[in-house]
Length: 319
Image (cartoon, rainbow, N blue to C red; front, side, top):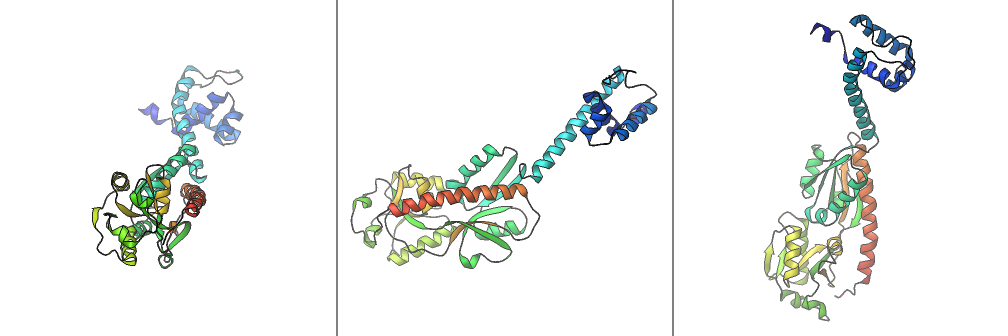
């Protein structure tokens, strides 16, 4: 026990560096020390132990049996130090760390989840923690420092307060249906045609629910039948594909699933002033990994926006 107390972690790490490089000069460079400082450390250790750690007259330096054994313990410390330095460098450069992301369920599941997977392919040392919520919950989580960024729709009036909102997509809604829906073959659609089919109602708390009710009022569909409500995006899409139901979905979501027998019913819906964007705190500590992910996400979503616009322009919209 008294012997162990004579040796510090600093001594062991220094010894490991000298044994690894075979030189005081190169060992000092590895550790970021001056050569005299490392030489003093080794002399101090040998004095404390009263036993030589290097064989005399050997170049490169060759450890004694005891020096070799102690250096093995120092290698563990040296490796941990190198790993810690790498983690710090990765964090500062935005190449490592944790990013806490929140978002509205349908949009996150349809688009953002695949973008997270693509981001992780090139940034394996960044962990993404994903949670769901709507604007009020996401704002509260950001304010409480429980999230680094959120992906959410917001109107111009909602883009105030202690948050920065970076618009990435216009939030256009459409009437969605299955690709084989009978109304797709009908010309001159009327509001009565829409009443002939049951609707899927979005989950409670979703901005889509308010949008759907506004659309129904504008079309005079107050008596529309609700056949299914409150489901996840997957359950809504599955129900939509297997029935003649109608629902309101973001155009971006329908566009993403256009190869899954889900399409747009070409009925015009009034545009609001809402847009999808990345919400962050105006003030707070810098999070390089979160900055990097936000930039990646914005670039991917801008690319999607161009594709969605082409798709929108190709639709023969009715009244």
